[in-house]
Length: 405
Image 1 (cartoon, rainbow, N blue to C red):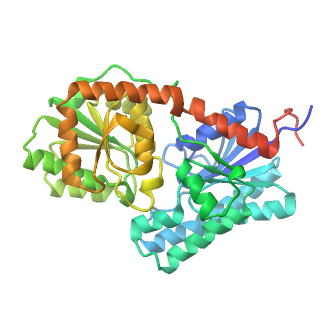
Image 2: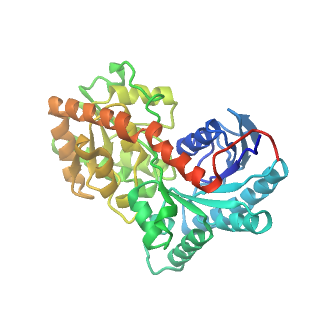
Image 3: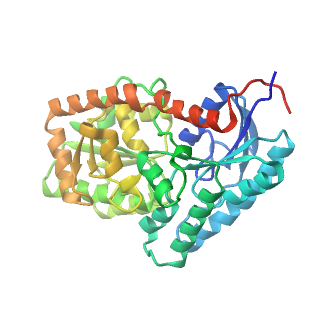
């Protein structure tokens, strides 16, 4: 029997298995015969510093505080880097690995990858979930700032260190090829499609409409670049200007801007028609999305969002929901004709699109059917994960055994 190829995944944004994409990657590789370990921050539901789930070793460190300023944004990088390095050394001592699979942000883990490449000849894989320089611009602005230039430098250094790049969509692949000057043959597009087999519609719960005729849902992170403030101003137009009192809005999720969004909701006088649940269980998410008459994607046009695939779009599609979105490149690629699109950042038009779609039941139903079919036939993880296995097959070869080193 040959050796089992071993992979260490490093992620900073969310704990695993809460980070759905990373957990799907880890379990897919494990099921294919690779041995997988993960380094990630702790979370409220995942506070153990070490555990094994589904045969995957998970090493966790205390999470840094939420980023609320440029200073805290910068501090998060070195803190997570040192924590990850410490745990990578621990993982190496407990069995080693053949490849480090680094999920960004941030773009600092190439230094860990380079150290292990130098001393242990491991491979380094750059799984680019976000464009960090564009993320900075979207949150803070300032393309000439020192911070932006540093982030671009780190991104390019990560490309130079990588043996292989995994991109979440074609736009990111083009970025890796042009800005990163990375060989296209070594860039693999692995889309973040949800597992359609695990996310299925359930029986609607009319009580979630809170006595209203319609329910509109938002699901996702609430950070400055996510546009929930745009959504609230669009809702104000619907409720206060157009005088639609038959719609209830539920905003599901949390993030750095949760408190600010809640204050804005109250300042706009929308607390009676806008519910903010925070993070809820997958079962509760399924109930809300199965009940919703439509879903919304208020991500505004900015340097990051236009070329990023929004997980919320794909999750709405799993549940067969029609949606309203700003007209962004990758959002339109995902939803195609399963959404109505408003001019980028136009809150009034966004609100009008909500009304238009709610008032056309036949259109909503047709969009929902198309979205569900597109997920099942093209965009679910069952389809997109094949590219991940192809990528690792080219990098490490097929795993040929389960014996240790």
